Image 1 (cartoon, rainbow, N blue to C red):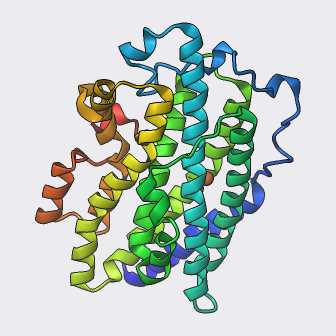
Image 2: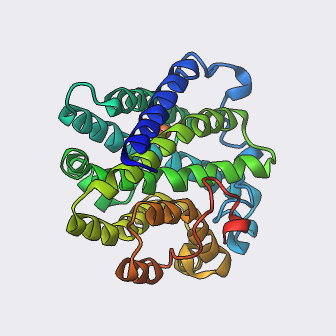
Amino acid sequence: MTATRHRTSYHDALRTLSEASVDQHFDAFKDIAWDDPAYAIDPGDARWVLPRADVLGGTDWYRSLPLEEQIRVGLYRQANVTKVGLQFEQVLIAGLMNFAFTLPNGTPEFRYATHEATEECHHTQMFQEFVNRSGQDVAGAPRLFRFLAPLLPLFASRVPVGFFIGVLAGEEPIDHVQKSILRAGGDLHPLLLRIMQIHVAEEARHIGFAHQYVEHRAPRLRGYQRFVLSLAFPVIMRWLADAILVPSRGARRDMGIPRSVVRDVYWRRPESRQMLRDLFADVRMLAENAGMMNRVSRVLWKLLKIDGRPSRFRSQPSSAAA
Ligand SMILES: [Fe+2]
Ligand SMILES: [Fe+2]
């Protein structure tokens, strides 16, 4: 594709995403009937038992707990995962503002970045409301992430390609987990189901934008910049995926997960390892397309245990990509 044609199709894609945000968007307090009795959170409700599709919910340890304990751990875990998600989104919103601040007039990214920030604000409201109503005083992400959170948005103006790689590192795993829970069906609490449906619908666009942006910008970087980022790429992916998916020390203590189970689930068991690899099939494809997969970076992807075959197209079912 010629450079001009590529630029036009990139601009068209951004316009399509922006228009989709106008056509279909959600308001945290208009589109969720929080006070509907069917949505009430009862801490004794068996629908808080984690589904088998959940990495922790699928373990023998969890399955052998008494029902009340499965419910307690299940509700805590849903609340904590939600809290981590919203903390990540807060970093993202702050980064999007820094990013938009640097954009010259007439840049197509400005409009989409602000649509995305608007949507993420609604997500943080809906996630925090869920946490509040769950009655679980959860802390969310591990300490290191919470400590670095105020600094991470600075990358958005200085190293935007790196920042959007980080965005994908957070959004891809959350989206993957939510989609597999929705796909598995089962007896999910209707409030959680509603929140996940809204989230998955809007994340598709955010993930689409981050892919478009990195794919468009990375080839325009200087060679050495692209090379450094190609090495940072898998490190960012693995670090953020762990921060989001692995319960922090405090959360493990509150849920009473034995150390051996933690080690097994994150990520020693073959099923867990496979899942970790599957999470990143789409971003491996992106790294290839953006010219950020080279001999050295490939070694890092492998060392970090997130190597594997790239998807052939976005959201390709993982069994076919693995
Ligand atoms: Fe979100
Ligand atoms: Fe998002």
